[in-house]
Image (cartoon, rainbow, N blue to C red; front, side, top):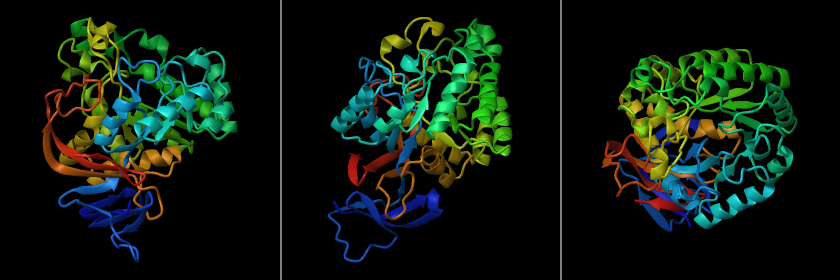
Length: 424
């Protein structure tokens, strides 16, 4: 279908574009920006008056819960949520059941994505078999099957020697390693930031060192192995310092942060409210401010959702016994706009952190409105107010601390590979 999007504010961070105008799509690709190509005949017109037209968002960590945990969510349900939130490309961590450690599991996920009408799901291969942390997976065959990176999700690795061998293997085949820096011995079944709040309510705590020690160890191994590494889900000021130094030393690293860590801190949490239970935990106000500054300065390259939908039972019981994670895809855009409203980010910078920057990290053709690339487009109304409730929420996971909160900024249309996959 030939689609024209007219009267919108076109923002494309990759080409430094921010102008009022039109966008033209044909055969699944962008064929014109601002000006229509010769002989173009629109079959479908979208009037984006007073709306922003930007690249579809690319998420570096979306837990879709399938295969294996369909009582929580499914590829069908969560891709619907992603489409409604402006996301057109999703990275799927390997901690499914079965784990993404064979080509057969990759094929299953691709089949499910096709059935859901959402082809841009990128499986991430497990670093070790079964995520047991002992025996390396067949990374090269998984790359051939379609995995664009390797990761160990949040599962512990048995030893630094295993991590070193995995990084050497990944570097040999030019595979990106997505690494979540967590030292399990220091986490020690903790569930909250080590600070006054955890002490006041008697919650098992997690020190900042649980992240920074794992981060430093991995940085040392990057120097040793030459592996390309993306650090997933940083949470504290000290990590920012380490990432900045490593980048200045010329190491091939990138980093991201979950959107909720740019807004929520440990003292925001009502006592024992498990919707605030995340890993890494919500840190201090000083940590959050340092993370915002790191995003502004480019030390942190991308912002992701770290979407983790849960069923009701997973969030019942004593706080330490509940499962960590927030259902977060649908809050990413309005929370990004809050940063813009607070002048912590410019709109074009916020869009870049959700589109061109993660696409560049992954090396995929996405995150831009350039002529000739696949037409992944998000159209949103930055002024539209809406409430998070059962009638507006698409994900099957209702585990969000923002339930019944009024939000500003709503996606009105999402186009993936030239096909409208969401229309309000």
